[in-house]
Image 1 (cartoon, rainbow, N blue to C red):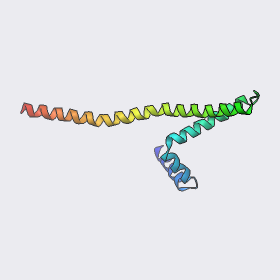
Image 2 (cartoon, one colour):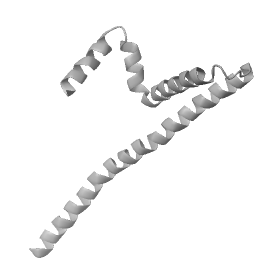
Image 3 (cartoon, rainbow, N blue to C red):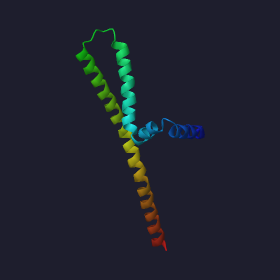
Amino acid sequence: MTEFFDRTLDNLRSGPLGPVVGWIERHPRLSAWFVLALGMIILLVIEARDVGLLPGQWVALIVTTALVAGACIWIISWEDEEEAEEAEAEPEEEEAEADASDEAAEAES
């Protein structure tokens, strides 16, 4: 399955969508914000089209919806940062354990 996924990504990178795929890979949070905001705004427009909102109200709703999507992506990114911190801390803990076991072995000798 991963081979299929990798092959598909390589085809996208080398095709006409290459610059778009490159930008998405360089800016994953911005692209996620854009996609989420677009989906939320489309749903908003579909659901509220018959409500009779004024143009200013539409603008306020659309801007607020885009900001909420950004807040959602920002909150989700907290988990990414925690995982990165844990990954950095694990090698340090392993080194400390190795040093402690080396010191214990030297003390026994």
